[in-house]
Amino acid sequence: MKTVDVTGLSCPEPVVRTMAALKGLPVGEKVVVLADTVTARDNIMRKVQQMDCEVSVTEEANQFSLTITRKA
Amino acid sequence: MRNCVTRFFASRCGIISVGVIIGTLAALLVSFGNPPNMGVCVACFERDLAGALGLHRAAVVQYLRPEIPAFVLGSLVAALVFGEFRVRAGSAPIVRFLLGAFAIIGALVFLGCPWRAILRLAGGDLNALVGIAGLACGIGGGAWFLKNGFTLGRSRETLKPVGWIMPGLMFGLLILAFAQPAFIFASEKGPGSMHAPILVSLGVGLLIGFLAQRSRFCTMGAIRDALLIRDFHLLYGVAAMLAAAFAVNLIIGRFNPGFAMQPIAHSNHLWNFLGMALSGLAFALAGGCPGRQLFLSGEGDTDAGVFVLGMIVGAGFAHNFLLASVPDKLVDAVLQVGGPAINGQVAVALGLAFCLALGFSMRERFE
Image (cartoon, rainbow over the protein chains, first blue to last red):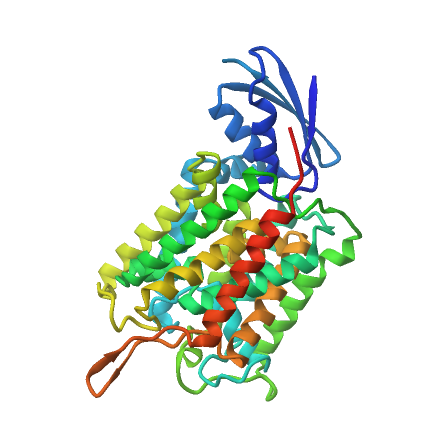
């Protein structure tokens, strides 16, 4: 499973890097994205949901881990 | 309750509501005394602030605008209430400082930041269309660089007191705005002499700062996200701001469509376009419009704070070195089109060269 670390990056780099990681990803495969701001988390979630992906988020001490699964 | 509020501001309805409130308040600030089509202009207000502090001596644009510190402090309150005050630093601060300086030079060649471009359009100033076209081109260039790996590098968490420096500075400016000591300059004529009552400016600024922090309102981000990732969320907010300001201007009789002799504006199309292209590119590379940089600096992003300081210093240069444009004027009943002198034209060219050099050189490969 691919992991993308976008911590500390300015907007919109977290979304751009997440989209790049999802490009060409086979259906059913997962990508884990590590983010450290609510803005990055929300922007990534909004974009991947538009891309027919499923996303689940866990948070620990202001660090977000987004597990994104390509559905189509 | 907090989660409910957060979800609302993250929704389409939330960003549209914020746009409507900002557009309405900005248009009304003109009725309260702010300059025409300049209810809120981050670049103009930072230029006035620079003048108030004596960083330039252009006598007509000196006033310690309370809206600027209020934006930062409103954002600070929102970040503290919602647990989002996170202190971070170290993402190419010197580059951000220079991007801020060039961004405001571009804005002062156009005579307004993206916020004022929207408000000028809402007041019927059609030169704003040219400026917005330039802005979109600059942002488009920035989006292309971002797509191809442009980065200013990562910031990292740092010690809490560092994050309080910008809010502390802004609080100090607010005290000076109220105290009005003799060493603070204040225009007696021109745009700097036109302002809403200080408590109105403060209240509106705090409210906008709070709402914009919660909703991540960003005028540059609206165009960038639409071009780069086909995400129109922020664009709904900006469209709502334009529509609300337009409606208020119609109601209060401040809509005067045309190109020539618009208030505090010039109809030199080439330099309206190029000035805003420089601004748009600099804002895109730095990750936020001038308002967003203020809101970020209120929530602990010290790199955004450095960008803001770059804008204020850049405003000083813009007037000391005669880089800013002059507005259209009538001489013996004949229109004299304004715009930048040769100094301003060279500064815009230098700024574009600087931004392009950054865009091509500061790249990181990612899969």
